[in-house]
Image 1 (spheres, rainbow, N blue to C red):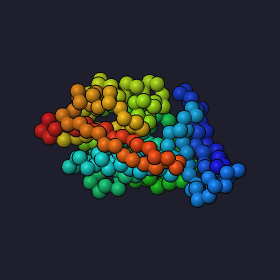
Image 2 (cartoon, rainbow, N blue to C red; image 1 turned 45 degrees about the vertical axis):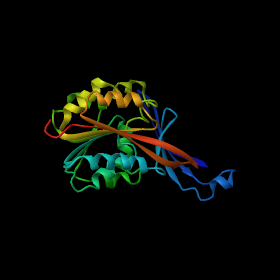
Image 3 (cartoon, rainbow, N blue to C red; image 1 turned 30 degrees about the vertical axis):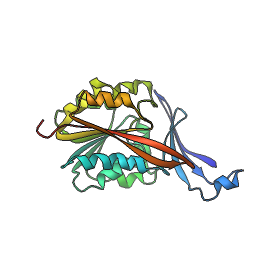
Image 4 (cartoon, rainbow, N blue to C red; image 1 turned 180 degrees about the vertical axis):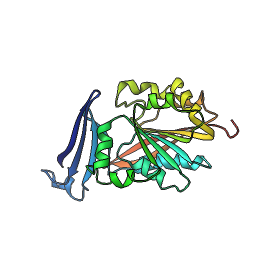
Length: 235
């Protein structure tokens, strides 16, 4: 594979890099049939790419399926926009607030460095907030959202930033519950099974569950997880 850097930003949390993977290089067998893809890395750690996006879409689908009227949705983490795209594909959604920590990533989406970004952000239902999700949740008005989707790390075991550990613990989850309307839900994406997250969700929400997702990534089988917590109707 050949890698072409498209954009780089230095932040107080470290380095954010957007690069393009192109077929080529010495290993022609590996290059044959491989698609060109965008890849996002934070401090050298792979965050996501545009090849395997089924789980980002499944994150939105799982949440949308358990809420009868998902009129107002909050997405924690912009990424490359695929979770947000799936949310906006649901005609029941009236507003979608996306909370993203990195201004540079929002800029790349807006200015077309990420080619599909401008069209996604042009949707009048979208509001992008550049902030730490922990602060945004703490400052949110109670009973504002029907859905909260959290995809800011590769799960509690694979943090992009160590300070994100609190996002998977009971105090933060209680704040998320306070944001939700009756019947609302939180869904969290994880790259691995996270029983401690399931336990924390169970202490806060009325109904919890976990779904394993089998995916094929870079010619190997992987299993990702979606964890959900729901507020009972009438609560």
